[in-house]
Image (cartoon, rainbow, N blue to C red; front, top):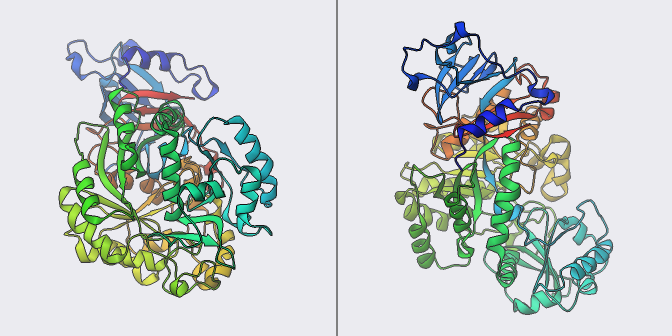
Length: 573
């Protein structure tokens, strides 16, 4: 990944865009360091006249920084940075723009979201699935030689609201070849009869752990596979393609990493690394071939259907935490529950409608409280941190209970999504040192959409969905992330919504910390990155404005002008 200093010079000196016009200039001789000073004290690059947002309480703001190699060697005033400037130092005049730490996205799906294994995408705005028939038939013709046809993009409500069986619709589009289409949240799959046949699923099949086989009123399979039932069939489909690893690699290096750089993302946590498909090897290959432009922690997927004895042994053997590497395999990703719209999110009280006929109508568990505790007890001593999906109030309570039961206080566990949280649990995040990881970039999490869940869980439980202010007020450590491809990874969308979702809005400082130093903490790298401090690695971004003086209604319009990763310019607008 290391680029030469010539690349740095080329990028900086070729800045001709309006955003960077006039930013690069040679300093007068009077400002250059005395030639008797050792050359090793000079900086490779210096950024001056800026609004440096340090995320460092001891020095909240500055005007300038100096970078030597891959480290920050100075943070302070433009006047005092001159001692680091030599005749070969590249000087960037920020002209009042913000320089801040690179963004962390600690819940994202980079390999799945950009893989060419997904052959077509349906329009999520389409409300009548009958119109999908032509699109699916056209995709089938375009990918005539693949053993499975794999799609993405519809919403579950569209499929549920059809007057005809979803299975019949999909069979009309393609009946000779298995078809599987992932719903937009990934928590259900739409399949045809051929796919059910190959998966050996029929009307007499039992629901798998953490999943539900969708049925009509007569008990016949209807082509919808909820949660882990769909995951199991998708695994079969991808295995049949035989090239999913190459597709994931190409998607990562050709699309995803350049896009991350464009949006200032320099650290990520892969929120579901399927080790049975060797996805960790895709990341390791990218690092070995020097393609990575992010620091990445992988969350190994805990398969609900595997035996604990086998799985715990496999997970332990995959642990890697070399501090000199960009890729670390040091997190476990597991689901406590499903999602609200499927009525699979685990709730303390029953749903107001019975969609799936689950016992008690309170959602489902991928992993029970006791099983989560078992995994924490076995894997925390090795060094694993747990990244636990929890959407319903019962799932969140159970995840917190599991940490309380099994953790020795050595880990940095977090619960992600935190959509419906029992107020009694707010303070437990602080007490148990569990991070609350929230996604608010999607418009569906904004207050104007809260009432859309009322028919499922009532007005009271729908109110204060994703309660980031309440959690922060209770002392919880908060991180903000995207869950891409559910929401776009543009951090300014997340920042904008976090500041504009009263009564659950937070401040700019809280939101920036959630995207930087708090994310660094969950990745165990807060001593290296996440703030602008002397001695830390040079992962930072330059914005097109001073974000502190930008009206909060305009935050989402912010752009990245420059992204620096490990001391190297990897993006310039």
